[in-house]
Amino acid sequence: MSATGLVIANGEKKQVALPCSIETFLLSQQLPPRSVVVEHNGEAVAPSEFSSRLLQPNDRLEIVRIVAGG
Image (cartoon, rainbow, N blue to C red; front, side):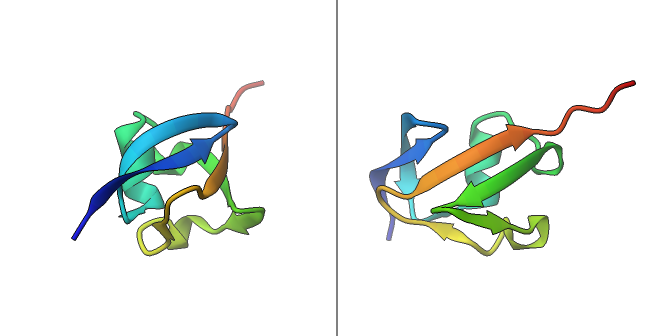
């Protein structure tokens, strides 16, 4: 059973269907999971955990895009 809830991503409130995985959240924000580094409630999350780590109401995410260049 899912419900709508708030997640705070980079200081911005986002309405999402919860619970959802970090991977699902990233895709809903048009962020390819392989292009970002994520901190969930103050803890760094390995990309291998994106599909299994579930978000709950009022969770905090810090998302940083990885940019390659020279």
